[in-house]
Image 1 (cartoon, rainbow, N blue to C red):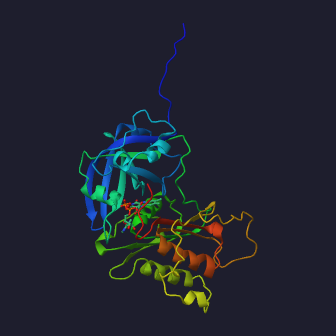
Image 2 (tube, protein in one colour; image 1 turned 60 degrees about the horizontal axis):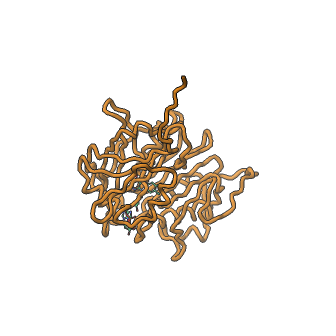
Image 3 (cartoon, rainbow, N blue to C red; image 1 turned 90 degrees about the vertical axis):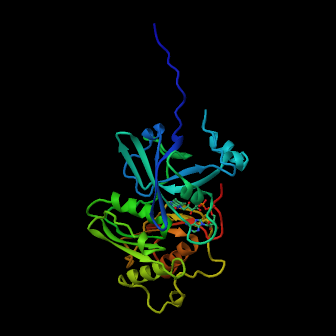
Length: 327
Ligand SMILES: Cc1cc2nc3c(=O)[nH]c(=O)nc-3n(C[C@H](O)[C@H](O)[C@H](O)COP(=O)(O)OP(=O)(O)OC[C@H]3O[C@@H](n4cnc5c(N)ncnc54)[C@H](O)[C@@H]3O)c2cc1C
């Protein structure tokens, strides 16, 4: 006699309700949440996590959390069609760490407390979250393609990692995942001196924390990157290079800026033919993420002014001043 077992079809991602296990204000600009839940045991990727992103759905006005009961592949489409009071808000964050503990798998996420203005629903929820608070996550399931990792340097590349406070979790995770013989530099701009973290890194990757203080967002990191690249010989006297750091032209900011060696938000064709001739920045791989104006300014410097090959860079607008994330 044969036995037929039926089970729920497995979604290619982990879509599950999770609970805040601990919430800690680790510094003026960060709340660290540790999330737990049975379904997290299936979270994982084939390889290092690097800058792995995931979706967090927090309760909407009224405090109701969206339901994932009986969710199937159509969940996302039907979720977004629901009223906000029912569906809540979906935001993107980085897996700072994935810890397998005797009590279960824990996802660690560092959420920025907005420096100025009203916090959005994501930041507000994180600041108020206490153990027991619930949210929904969409995360990679082990053994299934998920995407969401952009850091993909060629072997032996000289690395340049640049970000503001929202990219600190990703850069710290990348630094911890890199092989021991990796080399390069990382520049991280944070609002306060107390936001500087101790992070494990390969000996060959120099890490510089830049405290913003009263300077405009992105200026410190922009100046630091210009200085760093000057050491490898930028074009001196380029009129475009005389533009003030961190200040892209008005109207020049691409709100959806997302350009990697394999994807362009602007629809710019990706040239896959190998570059001929020797460029002075050949061998450099840059990963830049943060507020869109900051990223746009650095993109202009690296690609337009210094002529870096688009296939050596990943530029990602993680948020845009004055604009809430779409959800
Ligand atoms: C791939 C990826 C990974 C990310 N990883 C992280 C992460 O690990 N940690 C993290 O904190 N963020 C991360 N972000 C950024 C985060 O998704 C945005 O900051 C998001 O807008 C926060 O949602 P919210 O509900 O708090 O604000 P929203 O509702 O989106 O925005 C409300 C208002 O707040 C402003 N705002 C948004 N973010 C900030 C900010 N950081 N500082 C000041 N003002 C802000 C907006 O301009 C808007 O005016 C990531 C983004 C991406 C795309």
